[in-house]
Amino acid sequence: MINLKVAVLGGSGLIGSVIVMELVKRGHNVTVMDLVPPNPLESDFVKVDLREVDNTASKLRTFDLVINSAQYYFNMEAMRASLKAGVNYMDLGGLFWMTRKQLELHKEFEKEGLLALVGMGAEPGVTNVIARKMREEYGIPREIHLRDGWRSTLDNVNWSVDTQLDEATMDAPIWDGEIKFFPPFSRQEEVEFSIGKIRTYLTIHSELATFPSSFPGTLKIDWMEGGTGFECIFLLGKIFGSGEVRGTKSRDLLKEAMREKGLIGYSGITPDEVEAAKVIFVYEEKKIEAEFVATPHGRFDGTQFVTGISPVLAMDAGLKGEGVLPPEKVITPDPFLEALKREGISLEFRETA
Image (cartoon, rainbow, N blue to C red; front, side):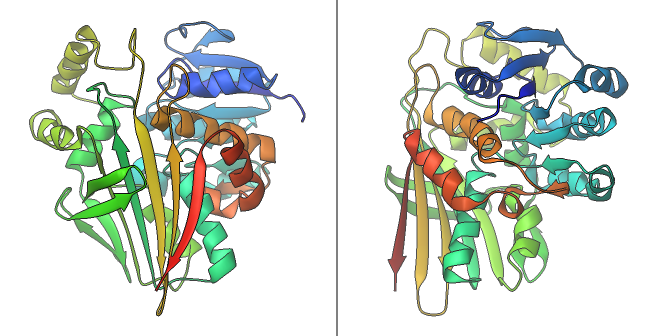
């Protein structure tokens, strides 16, 4: 494996910390670029404000790869800085509307011979790669259903509060021959995961921005998620979330109160959240289900770990392509999924009539 010089934007955050830890463990030369230094400091640190695109680009020019784990509102600025710096780019996703905006930069990255791999976390990310494997083995399905669930005994928030509030307030896309939008939480479904039965809800998600073109001929595609505390997020969305990007004063007050109560992250607490996600392909006479389950690893819960390690494993597998592309068009499934299983993330395929 070749050791690379990698910049991790937002590397001081909840998921960025996993990415940094796994990159350092593999011997890569890592620099965190963020507004505040990480704790613990496991790599070099450079203060960066992503709103300052030219300044960010000047600090990225010597790197082999940019991994962006900052709040998804800044994905476009991060991409433009990477483009100006002439560096390949990867991020964890950005909800449906942001992913669509990112795809508009395809020709600019392609012209420069650069790859921007968008949505290479857990969901999106692992789900996309699993869907590609299922297509290769079984063909294009009539329907694709994506389901995500989690369980925890804690009330702590383990990823972006803003993103969760956006999911609870923004209209959700469904592919039904064309993209149609529905109110968040307006549909629900009880799903039997390996970790138990969980009520999932319709929310906005970025797989819907790429799956219709990546899996042409599929008639229906939808996404639902749910788990411990998710109904509370829906309620908080009614109070604090208007779906406006880059936050509001009321959201800032909410996040400050949550920090004061120690509810963001796991300072001094052992995380126990376990996450499961299913990719379901429906054919005329059969149904294929693939499910992965991620459990806690040290100071990170299952959701954080699988999201953070996925871009690292994708990088180690070798990234090929030019332009702005989703995981299902870049990542060869078998090596990536085998590496995921070696990290303790289980993966099972089932066929039913």
